[in-house]
Length: 338
Image (cartoon, rainbow, N blue to C red; front, side, top):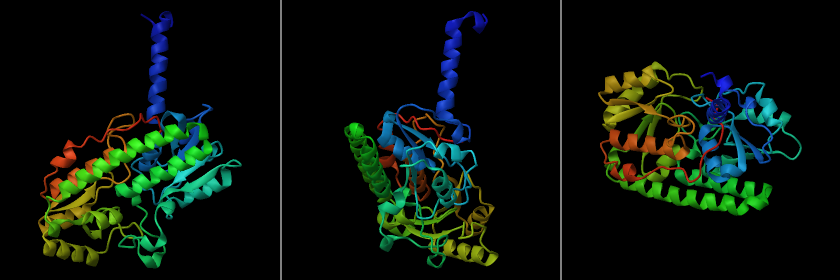
């Protein structure tokens, strides 16, 4: 039967299309949104979008800007993003000099009263900044990847809770309730992480990764970051640096090194072969697992996937982590550009 002759079928099709568009995005954040009567929020990388969504729930319209699988350090927003930024009430960014082009575009286009809130910058004092392989102190930019550490992700959520409550005081108790459930979930995740990591001998908890995204995590969970392939200019390391990493991996006898599913690294693969260790190429630091709307597509799903992967690759028992259910505390209605 033709849908034109079946109004109920046509209505169902229209509703399905609208749901798909709202959940998936199309890489052009400015094409989404609209006047919903809710606070309008823009975010940058997907983990931040997810954290904001866990606090804001269905009381806030959230649109991400940085497409998943994009290098957030070098991302240049499309001119069309300016239109989105002209409509939002607040832009949540990581800060710590991660998203400078987006911040500059926002400064030029935000409406009166709208603000940029740097979650990472507000979460850590300068005395605790990490400087390392990809982020040397001489370059003046600290490692910005706080969100791979649950404690800082929870701090992001706390800042968002307070900021949203100030902007929409009538919904403050709702934001607090979502935050409290998220806090409880993160506490359970932390316990599962520590239980699983304890099954790995301390001497084996050494990370050589595709990208230097785990510095703050390593500090508190008893891991050592021995190197990162993506150096400060985001180019491959020199032949001399590669040779040094091969020697270091061989000497430390780590069972595995870690690459990215999003950014394949022939260099890491070479190091793995020459050092005789497993090359695990599925880690990710800001590309959420699954597709928007799926249960695992969240900050918690991302970190759960990574830390199960690390534990098992290092020969540990990830049972505690696998027994933990990384479910969202509230439905995620944010728009994630792909």
